Length: 298
Image (cartoon, rainbow, N blue to C red; front, side, top):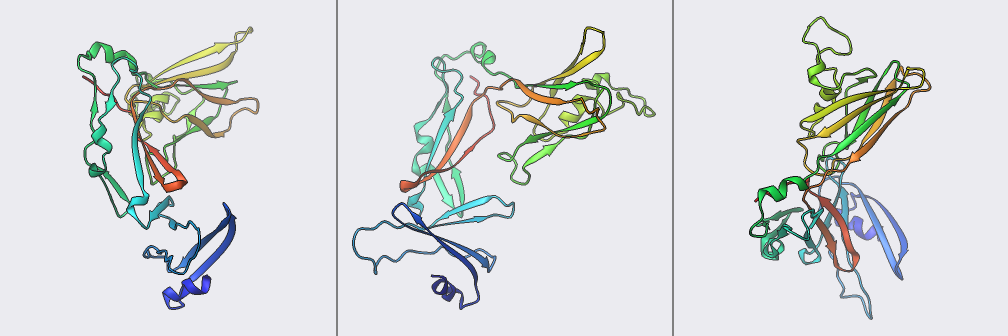
């Protein structure tokens, strides 16, 4: 097989071919190491085959952002379903996706880009604004630092589904005694302490792309001897709509050996979400992507 495929490139290709058993037949994986540019899809020719058989072909590669890309030789092998999750109004005043939104005439697939021409979401007649406001819940994160004495830490948030260029974002170092909000920062240009401009927890979190506005409060907990044992920051995301990826600890600097930091979700954000599923023939679902959360208002 390797020799036959190399003939397509006049013998100038560099290939790596592997073979394995696959559902009663064989699966070949062909890595085309050279040329590195995009090539045409391989086609299947069944004319030399006899008897009962099933065969299909697909190609997989990484794009310029190291994300997997799947190509198909025929558009009819692709079926895309647009459905809704986290439908928080159901069963009453439940928004519905218009059936024509996913009709094949309203979906175009060109050069790996899927375009939906007419996505329509409807609310039942008579839905009042007063009924919709309480159902959207903002995300709340709680950061807990034990034995807060010195040092700093950085937090990570994973946005790989929203930003194809990066897998995650990191905060700038957050001091162990960082004040909660922008209002706690000092406007004195000569101030380099924990409350100097840009040093609040709110400043560090709001500097992360996609986050938007955050309300931050701080709570210090004392032990029986009156010494501070835990420091907690409560983060309420007022701009971001829907379920936000969780924060996690990335690194610490100069913190006491018996200090630890945890990040937990106090409340998951709720909103409407559209999910797009890419599937093919008997293989079933191959890939699913979700939109960011959004609101549907009367």
